Length: 311
Image 1 (cartoon, one colour):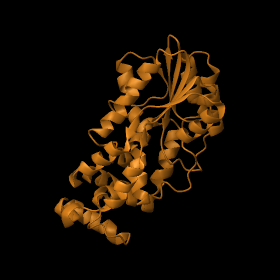
Image 2 (tube, one colour):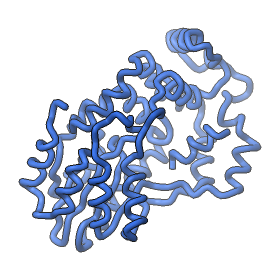
Image 3 (cartoon, helix red, strand yellow):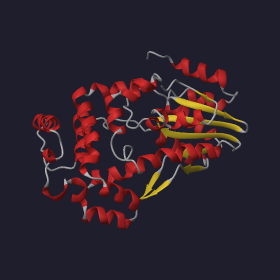
Image 4 (spheres, one colour):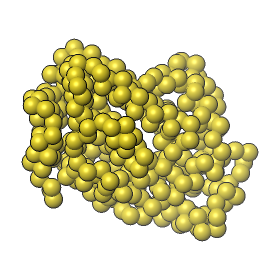
């Protein structure tokens, strides 16, 4: 049940450091907040507006502690910002928690006593069965979404020995410095639960396939993903099997919820483009840099974007 609740809450050095500082500084205004933020080592993009600057920090979750970035610089930049925007947050009520407790099996098991082989092709089932045998796990009745996250968590251990994510760093710093903070959106827990409950098992097969790809690629992809993030090699991060798997799983891959999570960012950034001063926003990298994502949409709207190449 703890893992299930975490799923719901979720819905909620080849290129040196100087490369990003120099490239962005040539186009960005003389803004000490921008320079300080860039020195953190996190990939980010700046948008110069007639009244100020928007800093978009591209976040990946579960950064290994071994990744050489400087969160203190991001804390310092946050304390100087005029406002901060963080990702969408699910608003889970006590009633939502009770609903999960009493209908938990609906989210963790395949429906009506069906088994995985009834939904998968023979090749997919053979692959899943082989992984289950190798890892001493029985995936026969388990929901594909739960199986996917369990494989990533247990076999890749991608969320072990991690440092604070960029959003956690910024949230704590903004709270300490009393910088006004808003969320891109607040999602109702009831809507999130309904969205997940209504999804048929087949909707999670792409997630399962991508998770199997990641597990078969091996644990080295965890460090590589973080290293590429730190090197500002955004296309390599996006192509990493782990990032690909996370992006193809609920909620990001859901037609309704995933689309909403992307649209809110474009509209929120457009909204603050008329605000005075500096806005610092922490945005999921997959939402920013994917084909047709936030950066592509902002570029199409004519915004002046400076930062690493994202495609």
